[in-house]
Image (cartoon, rainbow, N blue to C red):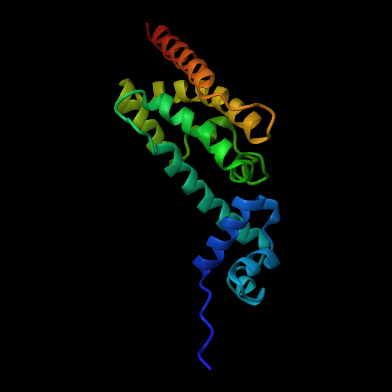
Length: 190
């Protein structure tokens, strides 16, 4: 009889990510992950002493996936900020379980907006904004904070099935919000 395939730590994380993607982060447990891997719970608990550790690893994978999703803009030279904002809202529409796991769970709790704006994960977004719009990184942070609150509100409502997605309307609102945020920063610099 051939030996059973070895379940790696990465396989367990991938399976937990898929559970979160399909049913939400609260559904991650040894049984659901083992079922996804078609194995017993032993390999899951071998790699992770607690389910909390596994959820943190799945959260980190979801966060990386989200960042890559945001930066996948059709035309990055044109309206990069608008593209990132629309992708954020589309992510909530297309991946509602992951959106709620990332932004409406206890894993996101405890971080202030000011801590978030200085997080390493946000550097690619701020750099893309800076390249597209010019200005300092501090100006991009101010613009980002203003727009983030607007975009996150839209995304949260959509992820919780409380608003029908209308891309033309959302894009129109985002363009106004971006113009307003940019003008406000420019006026403050005078």
